[in-house]
Image (tube, rainbow, N blue to C red; front, side, top):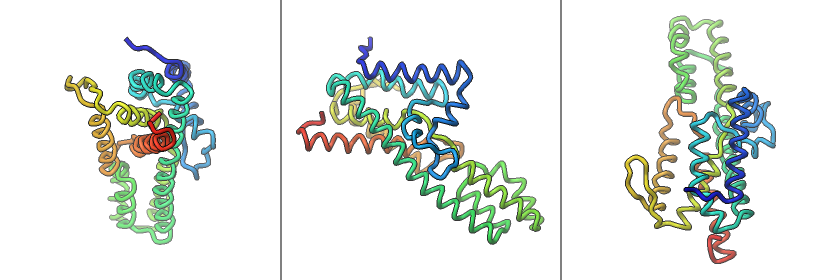
Length: 263
């Protein structure tokens, strides 16, 4: 059913082995904590994480979604480009997506860090409520009782406690490791749509054929919408997905100008 090419097969094998080590041998926390991509200012950041994050997944569903895309689309691209060129494309889009996402993450976390430092200078119940709602709304329900109590009793002790909570939120938001091959996978999807724009793909739900160019366009719009309208509890790195598509697009345009084709 699927004719695996060498690089695609090795990508599947490596990701499968790491998943087995993490889930079946009980090393998931260790692997994610040490090899997931961290915020640049995190004390846990290491340069090698720019590469290793894309080989680690948060669970079977995460792994399956990414590797199924590799299984379907990667062999076709590898047959066109050759194994070496495909692997370079896969790695560069994955690494590039991680760096772009980390840059955006750096900006967001640094902005939050500045706000927390400013809040420390002048704490108040209303300022704390706004700080949480505007920057960490997903934690508002967890802090609601404290915020309500703080408003009823704006004392020095509650000022200090609110400062501690604000710093805890900053640490939580800035030290969450990013994992997964989604950046590279979205680069693959973009490349497939550019090389085979009119190839029809059968959707699972609903089971209808859609041209590759339209499917990937919808994916891109959805990722952008999801990032702009991020819902509480959404821990998906949508900008990493878009970053993979952007890096993939730039590589293909470079190849087009240099070789006259996308390969």
